[in-house]
Figure 1 (tube, protein in one colour):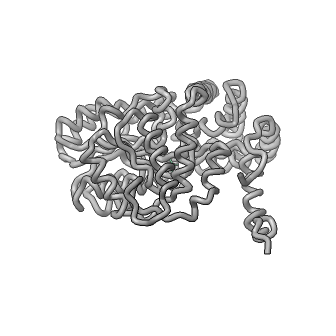
Figure 2: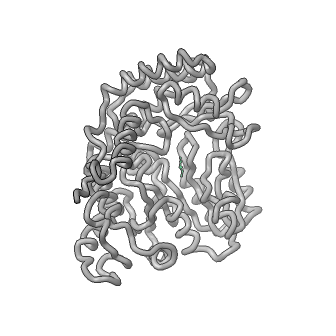
Figure 3: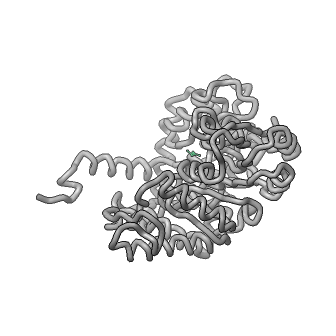
Length: 416
Ligand code: DSN
């Protein structure tokens, strides 16, 4: 019996190859997505998927972990070098698991969390009511002003009223630099722990293209797949030994069982890429490309939340327009440009409809696109948004975008 995927499981083989075609022919502009390097995928598909390794490097519960130890220690050391911190836990299976572990480590049930409102750009795990973070803890929120910026004085006022045990800073849809020092001042004023979730901006932070949460935050989490372009997963970092010990216990045995050693190996490979000079050039280019996207859309008459960007994404607002974020998402999708609908400050539509879209530059920058291509794409986006019901135009632009994409092929096969 052959277990090669093509013959053993042709349905899955076909779906994977279709996905490669989709990723190749469409322009991926979802701000939380990226293309990882083949070496990361090789590690994810490695024999480490077979290994149980409960515990931490050199302190395992099972035998045969000597190579898992090598891999996890390398991932930890590279993470600490990358973010200039003392301790890292590279085992969280996702960003949500990482955030859950921070709360489990540092809070008691019903303690108070203060985080950014989901509809203002925060994340479900920052205290949103449908999430464990809003159910197991008393959660309170701060938001952005109508101008799209966080008002740190207001956050201070809210923090003084709420007296939270933890303040969460970091966002999923915020186009401006986050001032971690100002959040530190707020946390100090009310005696709170400062927790920074840098999942969206980590790839910029480690390249000095965004202010670092260290030394201001007590604990920092990130995903490893968004702007870091590594494998899908999470990570927790701190400079505080006591917090590090609590986090380790919260992840294992608190929340997770055996770590995904194949993914940890892939995280280590990703961090090696993030530590390279090439990465610094990439992160700069992400910001330059996003700036072009913002400038063109503004020039073409669209409203951007905060009127611009400091990072890898823009939020386009359709408040006052006939069409919604959902309509825009669908029209751009038909034109071969993948984005996501997103709530905007002062939102009046439901989260399933919304009045905005979130657009990111990280993935197309990984394909090698630069300012010239982003200018073309932003103008095509504007053409679609100005002609939201013209399906013939959308189909024509889809062909043009496919032609553009074909010049920036990232993978020569679906499985590494
Ligand atoms: N789903 C992620 C994002 O799109 O930002 C957050 O977890």
